[in-house]
Image 1 (cartoon, rainbow, N blue to C red):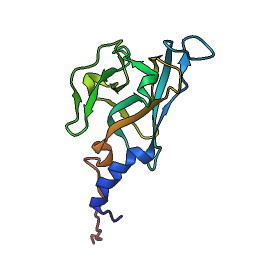
Image 2: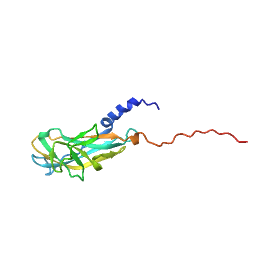
Image 3: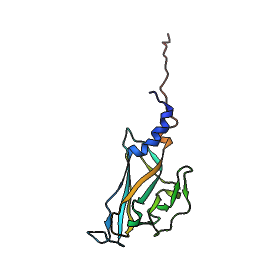
Image 4: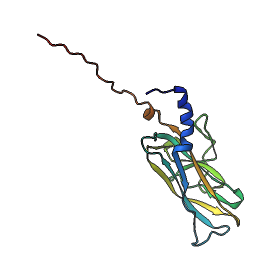
Amino acid sequence: MAINLADLREAVRNYLSTQVECMVTSIVPAVPNALSPNERFTFSVQAHNAPAPLGIALRNVRYHVQLTNPSSGRLIVPSRTVATAYPTFDTQSQAPGRAPIPVGTEVTEYFLFTGANSDGARLDVGETDSILNLPGRALALGLLEVRVNIFADPDFGFLFPSNQLSRDGRRSVQVV
């Protein structure tokens, strides 16, 4: 199989936007039937990685959750047993921005880390990962839209497995 190594960089850059599907489940008001100003709601986010043969394992998965219209509501930072929320994320240095946002704080966006020590989580080939029942609060009449995407790194151990076995080389000769 011929591979142009320069294509690998572009393939990695395109993978998340073409092979990973992110979703926000329905927004559920605390009081059934309709969401009113100053009412709390919950929602869940989900990321689905492509199955084999197109999928690759991902590591250091971070969810970026935001409101598209900040005047419509607020996201409430969830308990740390669910995820740790940060206000920014420096994708170049792979380090969380600033300190975690305190639990219960109302914001218009955050980056959720579900892994230990804020290093993100794995999303294996064909796997779907969810963060359930994230809280929020409506502020005003109008459209409230929650948006989610993820940042992640390719798992180089998956892409480039080490200690692989080659084909055997053999030659026989008859001993007489």
